[in-house]
Length: 122
Image (cartoon, rainbow, N blue to C red; front, side, top):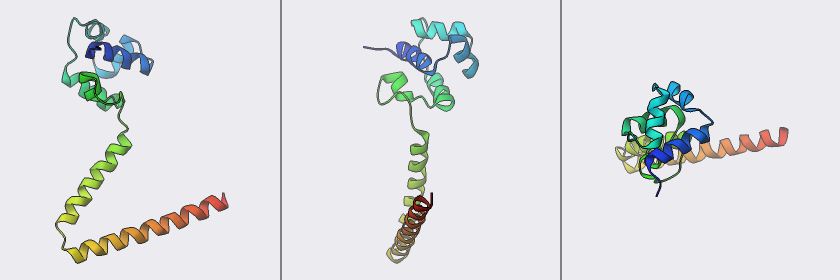
């Protein structure tokens, strides 16, 4: 079974970076990267967090081998927006929620029409 140390090396190699280059990008010395990769030092959660912010590395994959190696942050952003919309909708009465739904459907229809026109023109 792969360890976080081995997965760290896989990430570095997938990114095409040397230990020195990875260390420079995340504020560590090459020797610290080497020590983590060979298992002298464990990969700590803070390192997973830094790699997430710098390279979109999935912390769960790095630390536990769960999920994919990288996270698509554009999908994550959509999830945050969706959660905020849901919270707003929860505070509205049913009639207002229906109005929002009608507006969203009209907006989507208009966007689809625009997209189709652009496709035909291009």
